[in-house]
Image (cartoon, rainbow, N blue to C red):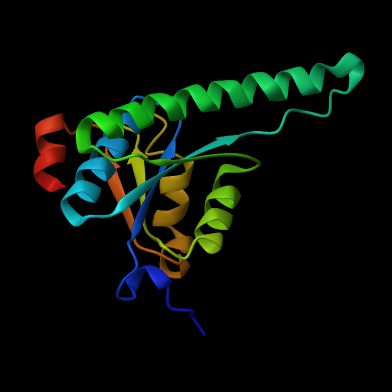
Length: 164
């Protein structure tokens, strides 16, 4: 049985989850989420996921690599948070996790019942829309716990604002 999310109940403020990375398209997804949240009175969660380093325990190299990756993820989230504040006047919730991006995203959605929409950026390069978008568009689309908004990377700011 599918559990009804708390975000749809009266009195609960829905949250949009935007996955933040270093891609150019990510800024477009954050812009869409911020504008849409402002229009709907929702809040926004920014998620950065750090891939765990290989098991390099020799002289603490693994710990240094992990710390650098976490600092880089935090910088990306801080930049996205500044954009959200500028675009929508909202203070986003910032989350950094370590693991596989798709797994950590699903774990966060399961843990926070107020998250009601996932916003992803679709790449426009030769590599396709990106692994998360490809996975969700395939077999996972019918079983995902919340709706997913996919923001194409080729849209300009005016188009994104009009859609939001």
